[in-house]
Length: 259
Image (cartoon, rainbow, N blue to C red; front, side):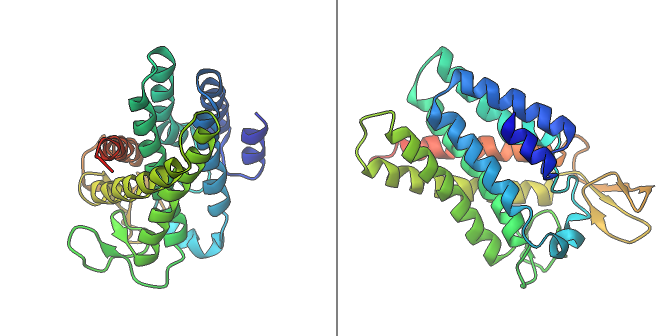
């Protein structure tokens, strides 16, 4: 409640987002250990702080996003709901598989958020992940070198935090942290790229007839925008949840490979 309350006060969460964050965080605290809910908190705090970086400079790009820097309940569920289900699954049927999938899920959502927030500061023109052509800043599927690097760091950060917390609860060797950092970095970057690809191909997109922008939301410039591509139900939240699941599967698969 303290963390969600502070985030609401700093306008990182809406009222519905704050309520959802309290429910999600409290349930994860009840069902999981520090490695689980501590990783979730690390993602939330780091991403919220990054969203405030040079906000005015990113405002133009964010105007076309389905959601702004203030997360609502849908975004909280998309970023943390799958992780919560994995945590509950581990509480009912303990198995290392749950943890590795969870690590990949959180690495992906963190990598994607860092890529968006830090990549939005890039001076280079974003390029489409599909065909490599230049696209406007804020376009779904647009990537930059800075964004890719931020994505890699975001995934590694989750691996580091999860490794440190997990090490305190187990008898693993210190090298275990290095392994989780690598898993987080690779799974996070991979999941983030999947997110960009889905955003450029399947995510529903709209066109504002007033300002001529291609946007993610149904309303812009105080008018209803018209759909121009994508699947109707494939919203930004669905894309985030789908890509995080893929990132989790990638992380688990990598964890099974011999060192």
